[in-house]
Image (cartoon, rainbow, N blue to C red; front, side):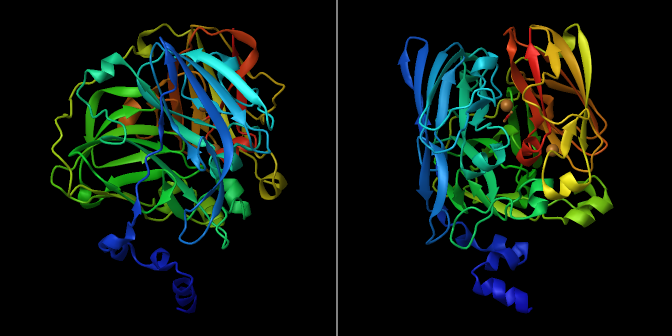
Length: 489
Ligand code: C2O
Ligand code: CU
Ligand code: CU
Protein backbone atom coordinates (compact mmCIF):
# COMPACT_ATOMS: atom_id res chain seq x y z
CA UNK A 1 0.00 0.00 0.00
CA UNK A 2 2.81 2.36 0.86
CA UNK A 3 4.61 1.79 -2.39
CA UNK A 4 1.39 2.25 -4.27
CA UNK A 5 0.80 5.62 -2.66
CA UNK A 6 4.29 6.63 -3.58
CA UNK A 7 3.55 5.77 -7.19
CA UNK A 8 0.46 7.90 -7.13
CA UNK A 9 2.41 10.81 -5.73
CA UNK A 10 4.92 10.39 -8.51
CA UNK A 11 2.12 10.87 -10.98
CA UNK A 12 2.21 7.30 -12.18
CA UNK A 13 -1.37 6.59 -11.22
CA UNK A 14 -2.18 4.85 -14.44
CA UNK A 15 0.61 2.36 -14.07
CA UNK A 16 -0.84 0.99 -10.88
CA UNK A 17 -4.54 1.10 -11.60
CA UNK A 18 -6.28 -1.98 -12.89
CA UNK A 19 -6.73 -2.03 -16.65
CA UNK A 20 -10.49 -1.58 -16.65
CA UNK A 21 -10.23 1.75 -14.88
CA UNK A 22 -7.78 2.97 -17.47
CA UNK A 23 -10.09 1.87 -20.24
CA UNK A 24 -13.00 3.69 -18.67
CA UNK A 25 -11.14 6.96 -18.65
CA UNK A 26 -11.49 8.88 -21.89
CA UNK A 27 -9.15 11.55 -20.66
CA UNK A 28 -6.29 9.08 -20.71
CA UNK A 29 -5.83 9.87 -24.40
CA UNK A 30 -5.23 13.58 -24.45
CA UNK A 31 -2.40 14.08 -26.94
CA UNK A 32 -2.82 14.67 -30.64
CA UNK A 33 -1.88 11.78 -32.88
CA UNK A 34 1.19 12.87 -34.83
CA UNK A 35 1.54 11.97 -38.47
CA UNK A 36 5.20 12.15 -39.47
CA UNK A 37 5.79 14.50 -42.37
CA UNK A 38 5.61 12.81 -45.77
CA UNK A 39 8.77 13.22 -47.82
CA UNK A 40 8.34 12.38 -51.51
CA UNK A 41 11.67 13.84 -52.60
CA UNK A 42 12.45 15.93 -55.67
CA UNK A 43 11.34 14.15 -58.80
CA UNK A 44 12.95 14.32 -62.22
CA UNK A 45 11.23 11.67 -64.32
CA UNK A 46 11.73 8.40 -62.48
CA UNK A 47 14.69 9.74 -60.50
CA UNK A 48 13.76 10.86 -57.02
CA UNK A 49 16.17 12.79 -54.79
CA UNK A 50 16.03 12.73 -51.01
CA UNK A 51 18.02 14.91 -48.66
CA UNK A 52 18.19 13.45 -45.19
CA UNK A 53 19.69 14.97 -42.12
CA UNK A 54 20.44 12.88 -39.06
CA UNK A 55 20.05 15.33 -36.25
CA UNK A 56 19.66 15.78 -32.52
CA UNK A 57 16.49 17.23 -31.07
CA UNK A 58 14.73 18.15 -27.86
CA UNK A 59 11.26 16.68 -27.68
CA UNK A 60 8.39 17.12 -25.30
CA UNK A 61 7.07 13.63 -24.80
CA UNK A 62 6.25 13.75 -21.09
CA UNK A 63 4.32 16.69 -19.64
CA UNK A 64 6.67 19.51 -18.60
CA UNK A 65 9.81 17.56 -19.47
CA UNK A 66 12.28 17.75 -22.30
CA UNK A 67 13.71 14.57 -23.75
CA UNK A 68 16.93 14.70 -25.77
CA UNK A 69 16.20 12.70 -28.92
CA UNK A 70 17.53 11.87 -32.37
CA UNK A 71 15.66 12.13 -35.63
CA UNK A 72 15.85 12.33 -39.39
CA UNK A 73 14.79 15.72 -40.82
CA UNK A 74 13.00 16.33 -37.53
CA UNK A 75 13.79 16.21 -33.85
CA UNK A 76 12.49 12.75 -33.01
CA UNK A 77 12.15 9.75 -35.36
CA UNK A 78 12.22 10.11 -39.12
CA UNK A 79 10.02 11.65 -41.77
CA UNK A 80 8.05 9.12 -43.82
CA UNK A 81 9.78 8.46 -47.13
CA UNK A 82 7.67 7.58 -50.14
CA UNK A 83 8.68 6.27 -53.56
CA UNK A 84 7.09 4.12 -56.25
CA UNK A 85 8.10 0.81 -57.72
CA UNK A 86 10.16 1.65 -60.81
CA UNK A 87 11.63 4.81 -59.31
CA UNK A 88 15.32 5.25 -58.85
CA UNK A 89 15.96 6.88 -55.50
CA UNK A 90 19.05 8.94 -54.76
CA UNK A 91 19.50 9.53 -51.06
CA UNK A 92 21.94 11.87 -49.39
CA UNK A 93 22.32 11.26 -45.68
CA UNK A 94 24.12 13.88 -43.69
CA UNK A 95 25.23 12.97 -40.18
CA UNK A 96 25.04 16.01 -37.91
CA UNK A 97 25.19 14.13 -34.61
CA UNK A 98 28.53 13.57 -32.94
CA UNK A 99 28.42 9.79 -33.28
CA UNK A 100 29.03 7.48 -36.19
CA UNK A 101 25.81 6.01 -37.46
CA UNK A 102 24.18 4.38 -40.52
CA UNK A 103 20.78 4.30 -42.18
CA UNK A 104 19.53 0.90 -43.29
CA UNK A 105 16.53 0.45 -45.60
CA UNK A 106 14.81 -2.42 -43.85
CA UNK A 107 12.90 -4.76 -46.17
CA UNK A 108 14.28 -3.25 -49.36
CA UNK A 109 15.73 -5.37 -52.16
CA UNK A 110 18.86 -3.50 -53.15
CA UNK A 111 22.60 -3.76 -53.85
CA UNK A 112 24.66 -4.54 -50.75
CA UNK A 113 26.55 -1.25 -50.98
CA UNK A 114 23.27 0.66 -50.70
CA UNK A 115 21.95 -1.40 -47.77
CA UNK A 116 23.05 0.99 -45.05
CA UNK A 117 24.19 -1.75 -42.70
CA UNK A 118 27.29 -1.78 -40.51
CA UNK A 119 29.49 -1.68 -43.63
CA UNK A 120 28.27 1.79 -44.62
CA UNK A 121 29.03 3.87 -41.52
CA UNK A 122 28.59 7.64 -41.69
CA UNK A 123 31.10 9.48 -39.53
CA UNK A 124 30.09 12.72 -37.77
CA UNK A 125 29.78 15.63 -40.24
CA UNK A 126 30.04 13.27 -43.20
CA UNK A 127 27.46 12.68 -45.91
CA UNK A 128 26.65 9.27 -47.36
CA UNK A 129 25.27 9.23 -50.89
CA UNK A 130 23.48 6.17 -52.10
CA UNK A 131 21.06 5.20 -54.83
CA UNK A 132 19.02 2.19 -55.82
CA UNK A 133 16.11 1.17 -58.00
CA UNK A 134 12.87 0.26 -56.30
CA UNK A 135 12.19 -3.16 -57.77
CA UNK A 136 9.59 -4.47 -55.36
CA UNK A 137 5.83 -4.14 -55.00
CA UNK A 138 4.04 -1.68 -52.76
CA UNK A 139 4.94 -2.26 -49.12
CA UNK A 140 5.39 -0.65 -45.73
CA UNK A 141 9.13 -0.72 -45.12
CA UNK A 142 11.18 1.25 -42.67
CA UNK A 143 14.64 2.63 -42.13
CA UNK A 144 16.82 2.82 -39.07
CA UNK A 145 20.34 3.03 -37.71
CA UNK A 146 22.38 -0.15 -38.04
CA UNK A 147 25.60 0.93 -36.36
CA UNK A 148 27.58 -2.05 -35.11
CA UNK A 149 26.90 -2.64 -31.37
CA UNK A 150 24.96 0.65 -31.22
CA UNK A 151 21.78 -0.12 -33.15
CA UNK A 152 19.73 -0.59 -29.99
CA UNK A 153 20.75 2.68 -28.45
CA UNK A 154 20.46 4.73 -31.64
CA UNK A 155 17.06 3.40 -32.62
CA UNK A 156 15.86 3.86 -29.05
CA UNK A 157 16.90 7.51 -29.22
CA UNK A 158 14.95 8.00 -32.43
CA UNK A 159 16.85 6.95 -35.54
CA UNK A 160 13.96 5.16 -37.24
CA UNK A 161 11.26 6.09 -39.72
CA UNK A 162 8.85 4.58 -42.23
CA UNK A 163 9.53 4.03 -45.92
CA UNK A 164 6.40 3.47 -47.98
CA UNK A 165 6.65 1.94 -51.43
CA UNK A 166 3.72 2.46 -53.79
CA UNK A 167 2.83 0.80 -57.08
CA UNK A 168 0.09 0.86 -59.73
CA UNK A 169 -1.42 -2.49 -58.81
CA UNK A 170 -2.14 -1.44 -55.25
CA UNK A 171 -3.58 1.90 -56.35
CA UNK A 172 -6.30 0.12 -58.28
CA UNK A 173 -7.63 -1.70 -55.24
CA UNK A 174 -9.78 1.10 -53.83
CA UNK A 175 -7.89 0.91 -50.53
CA UNK A 176 -7.56 4.03 -48.37
CA UNK A 177 -4.55 5.82 -49.85
CA UNK A 178 -4.53 9.40 -48.65
CA UNK A 179 -1.53 9.81 -46.35
CA UNK A 180 -2.46 11.34 -43.02
CA UNK A 181 -6.17 11.22 -43.83
CA UNK A 182 -7.21 7.59 -44.19
CA UNK A 183 -3.77 6.01 -44.67
CA UNK A 184 -1.79 6.37 -41.47
CA UNK A 185 1.60 5.32 -40.18
CA UNK A 186 1.50 3.86 -36.68
CA UNK A 187 4.98 3.36 -35.25
CA UNK A 188 4.72 1.64 -31.89
CA UNK A 189 7.66 1.88 -29.50
CA UNK A 190 8.09 1.45 -25.76
CA UNK A 191 10.40 3.65 -23.75
CA UNK A 192 11.59 4.23 -20.20
CA UNK A 193 12.37 7.67 -18.86
CA UNK A 194 14.65 9.10 -16.19
CA UNK A 195 13.15 11.59 -13.77
CA UNK A 196 14.71 14.48 -15.72
CA UNK A 197 12.80 13.39 -18.82
CA UNK A 198 15.69 11.79 -20.69
CA UNK A 199 15.34 8.28 -22.06
CA UNK A 200 16.57 5.54 -19.78
CA UNK A 201 18.38 2.83 -21.74
CA UNK A 202 19.76 -0.44 -20.35
CA UNK A 203 19.56 0.48 -16.71
CA UNK A 204 19.55 -3.16 -15.65
CA UNK A 205 21.10 -6.44 -16.63
CA UNK A 206 17.64 -7.69 -17.57
CA UNK A 207 17.26 -4.93 -20.14
CA UNK A 208 20.27 -6.15 -22.04
CA UNK A 209 19.38 -9.84 -21.70
CA UNK A 210 15.80 -9.94 -22.76
CA UNK A 211 16.08 -6.70 -24.73
CA UNK A 212 15.05 -3.23 -23.70
CA UNK A 213 11.42 -3.07 -22.58
CA UNK A 214 9.95 0.29 -21.63
CA UNK A 215 6.97 1.04 -19.44
CA UNK A 216 5.61 3.80 -21.65
CA UNK A 217 4.32 3.12 -25.11
CA UNK A 218 4.59 5.81 -27.80
CA UNK A 219 2.88 6.07 -31.17
CA UNK A 220 4.87 8.07 -33.72
CA UNK A 221 6.74 9.48 -30.73
CA UNK A 222 3.66 10.54 -28.75
CA UNK A 223 2.30 9.11 -25.52
CA UNK A 224 -1.45 8.39 -25.22
CA UNK A 225 -2.47 9.90 -28.55
CA UNK A 226 -5.98 10.20 -29.89
CA UNK A 227 -6.46 10.07 -33.62
CA UNK A 228 -9.41 12.14 -34.84
CA UNK A 229 -10.52 9.97 -37.72
CA UNK A 230 -11.47 11.91 -40.84
CA UNK A 231 -12.82 8.90 -42.69
CA UNK A 232 -14.95 5.92 -41.69
CA UNK A 233 -12.50 3.39 -43.13
CA UNK A 234 -8.89 3.65 -42.00
CA UNK A 235 -5.77 1.95 -43.23
CA UNK A 236 -3.19 1.67 -40.47
CA UNK A 237 0.38 0.83 -41.40
CA UNK A 238 1.58 -0.53 -38.10
CA UNK A 239 5.32 -0.86 -37.51
CA UNK A 240 6.60 -2.43 -34.35
CA UNK A 241 9.62 -0.17 -34.02
CA UNK A 242 10.32 -1.33 -30.46
CA UNK A 243 13.71 -2.67 -29.52
CA UNK A 244 12.39 -5.86 -27.95
CA UNK A 245 8.68 -5.97 -27.14
CA UNK A 246 6.29 -8.18 -29.07
CA UNK A 247 2.74 -6.80 -29.07
CA UNK A 248 -0.51 -8.71 -29.01
CA UNK A 249 -2.78 -6.14 -30.57
CA UNK A 250 -6.54 -5.87 -30.46
CA UNK A 251 -9.21 -3.22 -30.23
CA UNK A 252 -11.40 -2.99 -27.18
CA UNK A 253 -14.81 -4.65 -27.33
CA UNK A 254 -13.20 -7.12 -29.74
CA UNK A 255 -13.80 -4.91 -32.75
CA UNK A 256 -12.80 -6.91 -35.82
CA UNK A 257 -10.29 -5.58 -38.31
CA UNK A 258 -8.81 -6.74 -41.60
CA UNK A 259 -5.20 -7.60 -42.26
CA UNK A 260 -4.29 -6.58 -45.81
CA UNK A 261 -0.50 -6.46 -45.73
CA UNK A 262 2.61 -7.89 -44.09
CA UNK A 263 6.30 -6.89 -44.09
CA UNK A 264 6.72 -7.35 -47.84
CA UNK A 265 3.47 -5.83 -49.09
CA UNK A 266 -0.16 -6.68 -49.65
CA UNK A 267 -1.54 -10.14 -48.96
CA UNK A 268 -3.34 -12.17 -51.62
CA UNK A 269 -6.52 -11.94 -49.57
CA UNK A 270 -7.66 -9.77 -46.71
CA UNK A 271 -8.07 -11.62 -43.42
CA UNK A 272 -10.64 -10.69 -40.79
CA UNK A 273 -9.27 -11.02 -37.26
CA UNK A 274 -9.74 -9.70 -33.73
CA UNK A 275 -6.14 -9.91 -32.65
CA UNK A 276 -2.68 -9.90 -34.10
CA UNK A 277 0.84 -10.58 -32.90
CA UNK A 278 3.55 -8.17 -33.99
CA UNK A 279 7.21 -8.83 -33.15
CA UNK A 280 9.94 -6.20 -33.30
CA UNK A 281 10.53 -4.89 -36.86
CA UNK A 282 7.39 -6.55 -38.23
CA UNK A 283 4.86 -4.46 -40.12
CA UNK A 284 1.26 -5.08 -40.81
CA UNK A 285 -1.31 -3.10 -42.76
CA UNK A 286 -4.83 -3.28 -41.42
CA UNK A 287 -8.19 -1.79 -42.31
CA UNK A 288 -10.44 -0.65 -39.49
CA UNK A 289 -14.07 0.19 -40.08
CA UNK A 290 -15.11 3.01 -37.76
CA UNK A 291 -18.36 3.88 -39.53
CA UNK A 292 -20.18 3.32 -36.21
CA UNK A 293 -18.63 6.61 -35.06
CA UNK A 294 -17.01 4.82 -32.14
CA UNK A 295 -13.89 5.55 -30.15
CA UNK A 296 -11.94 2.29 -30.20
CA UNK A 297 -8.68 1.81 -28.36
CA UNK A 298 -5.82 -0.21 -29.79
CA UNK A 299 -4.38 -2.18 -26.93
CA UNK A 300 -1.62 -4.64 -26.16
CA UNK A 301 -2.53 -7.63 -24.05
CA UNK A 302 0.30 -9.06 -21.97
CA UNK A 303 1.08 -12.70 -22.52
CA UNK A 304 1.19 -15.03 -19.59
CA UNK A 305 4.63 -16.07 -18.42
CA UNK A 306 4.22 -19.63 -19.57
CA UNK A 307 3.69 -18.68 -23.19
CA UNK A 308 5.73 -15.51 -23.09
CA UNK A 309 8.93 -17.32 -22.34
CA UNK A 310 7.94 -20.42 -24.20
CA UNK A 311 7.09 -22.30 -21.05
CA UNK A 312 10.53 -21.94 -19.54
CA UNK A 313 9.65 -21.36 -15.92
CA UNK A 314 13.25 -20.95 -14.88
CA UNK A 315 13.89 -18.24 -17.41
CA UNK A 316 10.81 -16.19 -16.73
CA UNK A 317 11.37 -16.63 -13.02
CA UNK A 318 14.87 -15.35 -13.35
CA UNK A 319 14.13 -12.49 -15.69
CA UNK A 320 10.80 -11.44 -14.32
CA UNK A 321 7.82 -10.97 -16.58
CA UNK A 322 7.90 -7.35 -17.55
CA UNK A 323 5.00 -7.66 -19.93
CA UNK A 324 1.84 -5.79 -19.04
CA UNK A 325 -1.35 -4.64 -20.67
CA UNK A 326 -0.96 -1.33 -22.44
CA UNK A 327 -3.30 1.07 -24.15
CA UNK A 328 -1.60 2.20 -27.31
CA UNK A 329 -3.86 4.82 -28.83
CA UNK A 330 -7.47 5.77 -29.31
CA UNK A 331 -9.33 6.44 -32.52
CA UNK A 332 -12.08 9.03 -32.20
CA UNK A 333 -14.43 8.51 -35.14
CA UNK A 334 -17.24 10.75 -33.92
CA UNK A 335 -16.48 13.26 -36.71
CA UNK A 336 -15.46 10.76 -39.39
CA UNK A 337 -16.93 11.28 -42.86
CA UNK A 338 -18.23 8.37 -44.85
CA UNK A 339 -15.44 6.73 -46.83
CA UNK A 340 -15.91 5.65 -50.42
CA UNK A 341 -13.15 3.09 -50.03
CA UNK A 342 -13.82 -0.60 -49.52
CA UNK A 343 -12.44 -3.70 -47.88
CA UNK A 344 -11.46 -5.86 -50.86
CA UNK A 345 -11.53 -9.63 -50.45
CA UNK A 346 -8.83 -10.33 -53.00
CA UNK A 347 -5.81 -8.11 -53.15
CA UNK A 348 -2.75 -9.03 -55.22
CA UNK A 349 -1.30 -12.19 -56.74
CA UNK A 350 2.00 -13.33 -55.30
CA UNK A 351 4.91 -14.82 -57.19
CA UNK A 352 5.28 -17.60 -54.71
CA UNK A 353 8.85 -18.84 -54.22
CA UNK A 354 7.34 -22.16 -53.09
CA UNK A 355 6.91 -23.02 -56.76
CA UNK A 356 10.58 -22.56 -57.60
CA UNK A 357 13.36 -25.14 -57.57
CA UNK A 358 15.34 -24.92 -54.35
CA UNK A 359 19.09 -24.88 -54.85
CA UNK A 360 20.22 -24.85 -51.24
CA UNK A 361 19.01 -25.29 -47.69
CA UNK A 362 20.72 -23.86 -44.64
CA UNK A 363 20.23 -24.35 -40.94
CA UNK A 364 20.63 -21.46 -38.52
CA UNK A 365 20.52 -22.22 -34.82
CA UNK A 366 19.75 -19.31 -32.54
CA UNK A 367 21.50 -19.64 -29.22
CA UNK A 368 22.30 -17.83 -26.04
CA UNK A 369 25.21 -18.66 -23.78
CA UNK A 370 24.61 -18.49 -20.09
CA UNK A 371 27.56 -17.53 -17.95
CA UNK A 372 29.61 -14.45 -17.17
CA UNK A 373 29.13 -12.86 -20.60
CA UNK A 374 25.39 -13.09 -20.32
CA UNK A 375 25.46 -11.55 -16.88
CA UNK A 376 28.07 -8.86 -17.32
CA UNK A 377 27.82 -7.87 -20.97
CA UNK A 378 29.47 -9.00 -24.14
CA UNK A 379 28.55 -11.24 -27.02
CA UNK A 380 26.28 -13.73 -25.34
CA UNK A 381 23.94 -14.40 -28.27
CA UNK A 382 25.03 -16.42 -31.26
CA UNK A 383 23.97 -18.08 -34.50
CA UNK A 384 25.39 -21.54 -35.22
CA UNK A 385 27.76 -21.04 -32.32
CA UNK A 386 29.27 -17.86 -33.76
CA UNK A 387 28.86 -14.29 -32.63
CA UNK A 388 28.92 -11.41 -35.11
CA UNK A 389 32.32 -10.74 -36.67
CA UNK A 390 32.36 -7.95 -39.24
CA UNK A 391 35.44 -9.51 -40.89
CA UNK A 392 33.89 -12.94 -41.36
CA UNK A 393 31.49 -13.97 -44.12
CA UNK A 394 29.20 -16.66 -42.79
CA UNK A 395 27.18 -17.66 -45.82
CA UNK A 396 27.61 -17.33 -49.59
CA UNK A 397 24.45 -17.22 -51.68
CA UNK A 398 24.05 -17.43 -55.47
CA UNK A 399 22.30 -14.45 -57.04
CA UNK A 400 18.85 -15.30 -58.33
CA UNK A 401 18.73 -18.64 -56.52
CA UNK A 402 15.97 -19.94 -54.28
CA UNK A 403 16.89 -21.20 -50.84
CA UNK A 404 15.20 -22.56 -47.74
CA UNK A 405 16.57 -21.46 -44.39
CA UNK A 406 15.65 -23.47 -41.32
CA UNK A 407 15.63 -21.30 -38.22
CA UNK A 408 15.89 -23.20 -34.95
CA UNK A 409 15.71 -21.57 -31.57
CA UNK A 410 17.48 -23.56 -28.87
CA UNK A 411 17.56 -20.63 -26.46
CA UNK A 412 15.02 -19.69 -23.81
CA UNK A 413 13.83 -16.48 -25.42
CA UNK A 414 11.90 -15.76 -28.60
CA UNK A 415 13.94 -14.19 -31.40
CA UNK A 416 12.43 -12.22 -34.30
CA UNK A 417 14.79 -13.24 -37.10
CA UNK A 418 15.40 -10.84 -39.97
CA UNK A 419 17.18 -11.28 -43.31
CA UNK A 420 18.30 -8.32 -45.41
CA UNK A 421 17.59 -7.92 -49.12
CA UNK A 422 14.82 -10.52 -49.40
CA UNK A 423 11.15 -11.10 -48.78
CA UNK A 424 10.49 -14.69 -47.79
CA UNK A 425 7.51 -16.93 -47.22
CA UNK A 426 7.16 -19.02 -44.09
CA UNK A 427 6.60 -22.59 -45.25
CA UNK A 428 6.72 -24.55 -42.02
CA UNK A 429 6.73 -24.00 -38.32
CA UNK A 430 6.02 -26.20 -35.34
CA UNK A 431 4.01 -23.43 -33.78
CA UNK A 432 1.07 -21.42 -34.96
CA UNK A 433 1.24 -19.42 -38.22
CA UNK A 434 -0.47 -16.07 -37.70
CA UNK A 435 -2.63 -14.38 -40.36
CA UNK A 436 -0.11 -11.88 -41.64
CA UNK A 437 2.53 -14.62 -41.79
CA UNK A 438 0.85 -15.86 -44.96
CA UNK A 439 2.29 -12.85 -46.76
CA UNK A 440 5.82 -11.90 -47.74
CA UNK A 441 8.00 -11.39 -44.71
CA UNK A 442 11.44 -10.18 -43.79
CA UNK A 443 11.08 -10.98 -40.09
CA UNK A 444 9.92 -14.26 -38.57
CA UNK A 445 9.40 -14.68 -34.85
CA UNK A 446 10.95 -17.94 -33.63
CA UNK A 447 9.87 -19.04 -30.18
CA UNK A 448 11.99 -21.23 -27.91
CA UNK A 449 12.12 -24.78 -29.30
CA UNK A 450 10.43 -23.63 -32.47
CA UNK A 451 11.64 -24.44 -35.96
CA UNK A 452 10.59 -22.02 -38.66
CA UNK A 453 11.43 -22.70 -42.30
CA UNK A 454 11.42 -19.85 -44.78
CA UNK A 455 11.82 -19.88 -48.55
CA UNK A 456 13.08 -17.00 -50.65
CA UNK A 457 14.45 -16.09 -54.01
CA UNK A 458 17.48 -13.81 -53.77
CA UNK A 459 17.54 -10.78 -56.06
CA UNK A 460 20.25 -10.63 -58.68
CA UNK A 461 22.54 -8.08 -57.05
CA UNK A 462 26.06 -9.45 -56.87
CA UNK A 463 28.85 -8.21 -54.65
CA UNK A 464 31.42 -10.63 -53.31
CA UNK A 465 32.95 -8.03 -51.01
CA UNK A 466 29.99 -6.34 -49.34
CA UNK A 467 27.83 -8.50 -47.11
CA UNK A 468 24.22 -8.25 -46.06
CA UNK A 469 23.16 -9.07 -42.51
CA UNK A 470 20.82 -11.56 -40.95
CA UNK A 471 20.10 -11.18 -37.27
CA UNK A 472 17.72 -11.17 -34.36
CA UNK A 473 15.73 -7.93 -34.39
CA UNK A 474 15.69 -7.67 -30.63
CA UNK A 475 18.26 -4.95 -31.00
CA UNK A 476 20.12 -5.78 -27.80
CA UNK A 477 20.56 -9.35 -29.06
CA UNK A 478 21.78 -8.06 -32.41
CA UNK A 479 24.20 -5.72 -30.64
CA UNK A 480 25.39 -8.61 -28.47
CA UNK A 481 26.35 -10.97 -31.22
CA UNK A 482 23.22 -12.55 -32.71
CA UNK A 483 24.03 -11.45 -36.25
CA UNK A 484 25.75 -12.99 -39.24
CA UNK A 485 26.78 -11.91 -42.72
CA UNK A 486 26.12 -13.27 -46.19
CA UNK A 487 27.32 -12.21 -49.60
CA UNK A 488 25.50 -12.77 -52.88
CA UNK A 489 27.69 -13.76 -55.84
CU1 C2O B 1 15.83 -3.71 -39.42
CU2 C2O B 1 19.34 -5.49 -40.11
O1 C2O B 1 17.59 -4.56 -39.78
CU1 CU C 1 17.01 -5.01 -42.45
CU1 CU D 1 16.93 -12.36 -29.97
